[in-house]
Each structure stands twice: as C-alpha cells, then as structure tokens.
Length: 176
Image 1: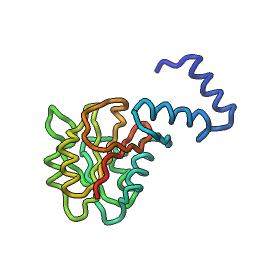
Image 2: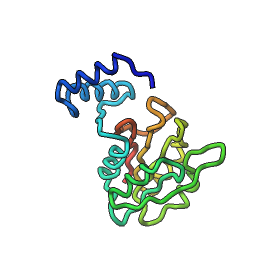
Image 3: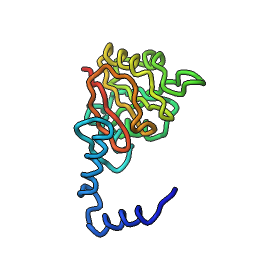
Image 4: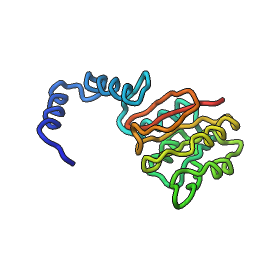
C-alpha cells in the first residue's frame, strides 16, 4: 500500500469532524461513485458483506428460500444469504478457463425453493449475464451481482439497471 501525507490528512480531517459515518465525506463519496458507475444513487455501507446482506433482504430472501451462488467465491457471498435465513445453493464454475458461475449449473440447481441468484464477477471478469438473466426471467428469480472484483467494469446489458452496493455489489434485474 502506498499511503502518504495526503491520505493521512484526509483521515485526520474526518476524525476531527466527528462524522465517522454518514457525514459529508460519505455523501460526497456516494455522489462521486454514483457518477462513476452511471447510476442515480449510491449508498455506502460498512463492507460488501453488509451490502450483499441488505440486497438479499430487500429482495425478500428468508427462511425456506434458497439462493444460488458460485462455489468459488469469498465466504461473504454465502454468509450474506445465510444472514437472511435463506440457504445458499452452490453452483459450479463454467470451466477451468472461466472461473465464473456456470449458467447451465444455475439452471440445474433451480427448484421450488429458489428465490434468487447471486453471481460474482470473479477476478473482474464478467459472468455470462445474458444467459443468467434469461434463466432468472424464465423462473421469476432476482439476481444480485457481487461486483467487488469489478468496480467500473462494463459489459453489454439489455435490461433496466438498478444498483444497491457498497464497494462493490450490484442488485440488478428483479423479475417476479
């Protein structure tokens, strides 16, 4: 990490302001990040785990539900699902050359208890969102995109865009 006096002074200013959260620096960050990713609103929370948890809660995941997520991911992906009372259902990766969640395995894991899909754009490489969104639409599932590895990354999208994140998680394309 390459920290110098500029970063130390910025942290010191925040500490002296006594606004350790939800203050003017956070509001400025939210506004600048929203501009950076091209959305109207951005909401900062403590970490991506909290953002994922809030996304799944907002979309109604809870006891008795399953949410499909990748088997190759950081533990927070599954934990955020568990925090709602729902159960993570792990789908395999696409291949040894593509470490993202497999749309075919997502489809194979869907059952009556499936409420949503959570994808991780592993290493900053985008998942096959076209196929995943077709699956979600066909089965009336929500999709949460964990973009912690991919802030600012882009790929072609054909659907309305809504994002709920902290550095950096997106909730996209709710079909019910």
